[in-house]
Amino acid sequence: MSAAPKKPAPFWQWSAVELSGAIRDARVSASDAVSSVVDRIRAENGHLNAIVVDQTDAALEQAASYDEILKQDGPIGPLHGVPVAIKINVDQKGTANSNGVRAFKDLIAPDDAPVVRNLKKAGAIIVGRSNTPEFSFRATTVNELHGRTYNPWDDNHSPGGSSGGASSAVAAGFCPIAHGNDIGGSLRFPAYQTGTVTVKPGQGRVPAYNPSGAEERSLLAQLMSVQGIIAREVRDVRLATRVLMQPDPHDPLQVPMPFDGPAVDQPIKVAFCRETNGYKIHPAVQAALEGAAAELEKAGYIVEEASPPMIQEAAAEALPALYADCEIFIGDAIQKYGSADIKKVFDFYFENYPPTDAVGLLRTMSRRTRYLRAWNLFLEEYPLVLTPFMMRPGFTWNEDADSSAGVRDIFDSSVYSWLINFLGLPASIAPAGYHEELPLSVQIIGRRFREDLTLDAAECLERVNGIQVHELWRRKGLL
Image 1 (tube, rainbow, N blue to C red):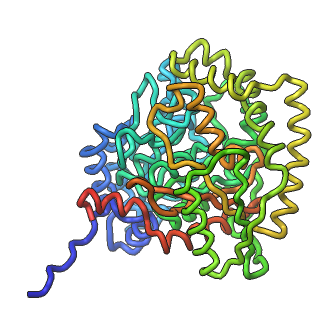
Image 2: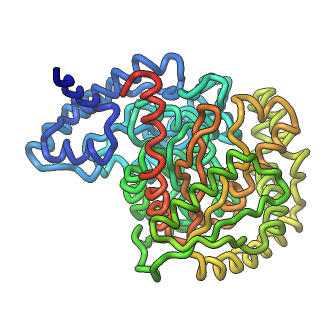
Image 3: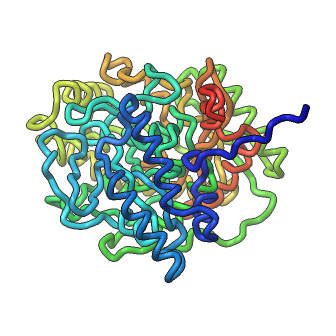
């Protein structure tokens, strides 16, 4: 007897690339694509709490109208009809930008942030807004306004932060791509924790601006914070990041350069960095790194053990500078509006990485140029650097609020997260295996403005290690 034919995957399991192509070719309707993820959200979000502002009714209406637009005028853009989620800390016209803070629940955005506008211009359909911790400043995702977001892999395993709602939504099948942002790891912690993929764009690559903001972003936010995408597949990160990078005059610091950079000498050299900055790396992470290095070499890269310059000097200054900036710009708001938990977490931050004073901050920002120059010269020889993202296999959902030592361990183990924000360089997260049934990833850092090169390498590792969320779905009997 012949085997029964394999049942087609439901649309909520499709990639954004597959969906956009099928919708554009009229093989799938936007209504069918959006209906599929809406059903999935309504079935599973009650437990996961990834989407905290439900916009599914409006999304269904919009999908129907987009089907008519397609018939009459063709696709709106490269994401025509593709469902997406927006993090609750950027402006979406007519909705609250609460930033996870109860006191800001009625801060209604007068207009769209550039990233929202760019996604809409590309034809994406917003199904909801994803959760973030208070002030978007924790490694996990929980707040008094919307509650805790769970990780689809395991309830006790943090979904990461601050874009934990985005990562949980993507892994659960609520949308193929979700918007997030990253000032110290807030795209990459969630991707690492949920087996999803991302690229942290470099400084100035994606326009950033919130019309609802009472004042301009702080200095460190301008230098370190970036907008980006979390997805299940590298090709979707690439597609959606191209969309986000479209120029917008509201951000005078954006550098309007093409996504695809000029050709580089082949084969590309990759620096395999074993420097741990004093942290004892976990054997499973070390094995994942060595496996990734071997696979990149098989794919044609030249992989050499080499450490980028001035890691210890730059790392010693990055977090004290960031927390000095936080103390000046959001310290009063945290004390006035924050929960007991977020106040405690910030006490832990300040205890472990004491904020530098004003003079020290200015001198740090001067020395930052020296660190970045040294890295730029290193990246001339090695266009890519392979590092751990964390030097340990993830963390539990409330570890950063349980103790000061817990905060220290998470951040010391992830020096290649916040250090790369401090330097403003691009970095991708790529699948690298599993430990105790949970996903492991590695990080690939690139030259300035070369997100494309980091994603090329990430795609090589994805071809070998598979799409990790598909393994999650297999375990749950969904594939």
